[in-house]
Amino acid sequence: MKLTYRSLLVRCLQLCLALSALLMCVNTPAWCQSQPTILPSWRDGRAKQSIIDFVKAVSTAGPDYVKPEERIAVFDNDGTLWCESPLYPQLQFAIDRAKLLVAEKPSLAEIPSVAAAVKCDIPAITAEGPKGALELFAVTHAGMSTEKFSQIADDWIAKAQHPRFKKPYTACVYQPMLELLSYLRQNKFKTYIVSGGGVELMRTFSERTYGIGPEQVIGSRCKLRFEMVDGKPLLMRLPEVEFVDDKEGKPVAIQEFIGRRPIAAFGNSDGDLAMLQYTCCNDRSRGRSLGLIVHHTDAEREYSYDRVSLVGRLDKALDQAVEKGWTVVDMKRDWIRVFPFEGKP
Image (tube, rainbow, N blue to C red; front, side, top):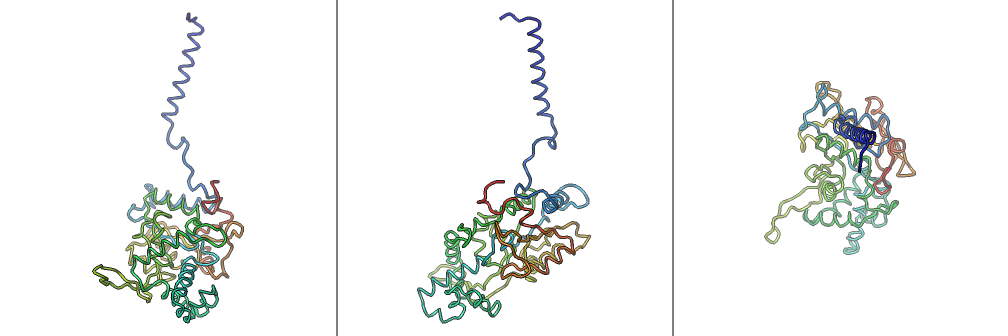
């Protein structure tokens, strides 16, 4: 085909334009290129920005820089990472266990808390404060090896469903918090669960649900005793409480099991207040910290509760959050979606 001077010029111009576009793509600085959305299930606003600003400040060179090994973040579980209403999953597990045990051994129904559990009479279980629940847990959580308990707990987690959402409890986790866990780990934070829930129950699902290994889960626990059973070394669960990882117990557990003071703490109730205070102690020599409270304000998509509630009561911690400048996440306002099963925004 014969090329005219004009057609040759046009082709040269087209080639130059294509080459220029290619060079622009190659040389465009990273900050100009399309970036994956940070925390996509969070609405733009003060809460989301406070997280991003904090992470940027402690992970990049500057006055607030924190070495990766000191980037410790602690999370409550119930009401912070997964749904705790209308009943703590740990208590529902104990109730379901009580029903099975009474069916096998009816005499257990003579224990008041067990009888109340069989009837699902929550006020009767909690009438004497923690005593009733602890008595129930002693019956339903003890008298077996740690391996046996983990198997029972794992089976329950696989089958039990939330009464309202008709989904497994591990599906009723908060999508924005899963994104937050991932975002922190991408920036070399080490994430821990520090919860009032039973440690062995949480350890059965924490890794596959949150990406948090069992060695990074701190919770309430019963006493254990080493025994040789049929030539096999076992740890047996005793009907006695070793430690309750709630309120003032949380900072104690953090020191005992982690050995470093966190720089970020995430909770949702007065049970997390001491942990937030311990993390955000306003000691300027420690540098920057982040305290965040999940405020349940969305009755339509989840639940709405705070100062007057049987679960996750948020009263004193909410007041202190305002006084101390902690971040308060308004679930209804700040989260585009609550649960993973809602679909992508």
